[in-house]
Image (cartoon, rainbow, N blue to C red; front, side, top):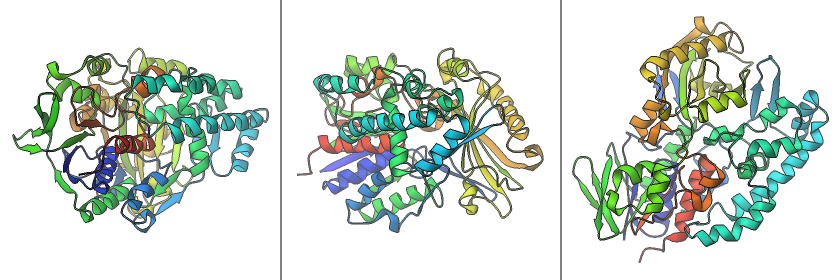
Length: 489
């Protein structure tokens, strides 16, 4: 039996491997020039940048995929645990190092407010309870049936999942800086902490239990390892080709049509495309179920991303591998981005300095940087050909006067991506960075289902599907369809 996988992001890669392990002949079609989807690698005159995900928090999910074929992930990729996991740089110049041992974290909390040490331990305990249910029990479970959702409601209510991440954090922590630091994680999966369901509070325990890692060579090295594994296992990979639509017989998918007219027939299809794009542009409207239509046309999408890449002709040894650079505003800034869809003069930033761990990312004596700035998605109607250069200049100016002094004189090989690029390059609806937002009303059954209601033998994985965005969620979505698809006959 033949399975076709559309898109080779982490969800598509994991799906292809799981299907191959079930005995299917597998073809993967990817519109990019290499595997990885958004996890691309850019190189400019000796400077290397991971274009997409940079934080590794659940390495066991990679290990599981290699173990399907009797191989050891660690034999192919070297993961290095980081300490701190993140350095928070506040607008007043103060900082907070988060991560490492529990004792190290408590020492840092005590430095800011000793009264919040006990609150953090209680938050961590609550996070573990969420993790045990929402991740361990439910992340690989299909929510195709509404009754599966109904059965979980009592447990979710006991965990206060109706509260937002911000509300949950405020129960346990009182200092405004610590509240900000411990509520920021939803932004890494496309959510506003003031709207995102507290289910995502499980990230605290996930990081504590498994650490935060960096793959030597970058996330691109993980993609290369999967590429080799897939080819060793006989998975057929076609790059630089885009799926335009599906072949169907009645209400059953029988394959796909590429933009060059090529037809590929298959017994089942797994889509790693943005599900909103899938239902709005790849399936005939008359064949889209009302549920799928509603989820595609009426959702709240995640924010957009402006990502600035650059090198420096000097090193900045005092800058951590992962830095969260926070502006003066927090709640109001996020309201501008998510609700008003306006581009403010101020911003908050995530800085990735891989050369802090792996010097090969830059020429000797230099540093490589990736700076992610949350911005409105394309529903904000910003003209990025105009706004891009101005925002880049504002970011460089802000970093120059704070944690990267003399950046103006040392910056080199700089370029950026905007929400417009996300829409063009990745077919992300409205240029959203993480598909639909992680609201309670857009989670589990309410999120895009992993088995399509519109066409039989069509399955969905990736950030917009259950269980959600972020590497752990995306890879787990392939475990969901693994439970739905029988072994090849």
